[in-house]
Image 1: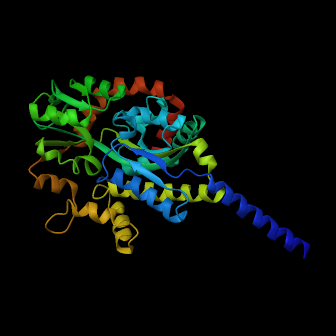
Image 2: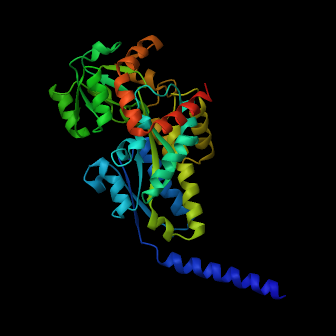
Length: 370
């Protein structure tokens, strides 16, 4: 009898403590993401907020802000804003956080990854765990991994088959040192600017090309309106992660922490599979199609795929781009090797910056799925 009474008392105290803690929650939490809502990235952000709101019965209400608007468009500022608490959380790219966390440039090593299996293996391996631990040490609670995707190049001038084809072309690239150095090594003239400035440059002829993932960015932004040529070279990948200010996360009850963590895992997997739709071996398509069938996508995936569905009802990214008038060429292994060798000096330099041990761990993970 005494034990039963004690148990009930402990349960009551736990529930009461959780209730009191929940009463101290903010009315609304802010979440930043980099692009627009009509992209897999944006849909992943909103899917996460929906899951959390639903599963906490509204205790945790998160509002997602796209276009890095909370940072006035300064994408690389978001990590520090989450860390210092001016933004509560973010669904962001490793690229945008790499200025503060140099090790994240692992994913930007030129021609380091050859497949989605390799990417997944590295994220789940020692290197991926090290990166998550490193972020947490800096005051941000991380959850990985989503994905913006392999980044491909487009331009308005010519098809690209060898490094010399990039000579003198002006390419809009991410404002990260490793990106700039890669394109300089290839003989291109890299320029950094926001997307609005880039599209103006495309129209005026002052910018020739750009690099971005296909499904998550180029199709939603209708890149064919600016460029005729696309080269599929998979030169580097752009993973995403959810980061939450550590004090904010610690303020949640244990139950709500568990709910948030589970929602982050599910949202990132949903986002990754949507960004890979039609690009991998069919795994992503099967995953998303099953979610749509069961109504688990909350309408996000169904609505997104409808915007670029072909007449036969399929969603093949490259066939779709060709149907819009683009000329798409996929580099052969031999052609890709020319680019890999040309950018070898950049690779070697950045291995030292990232940390040789981390890169070795990543290589070991890659080789485990060869």
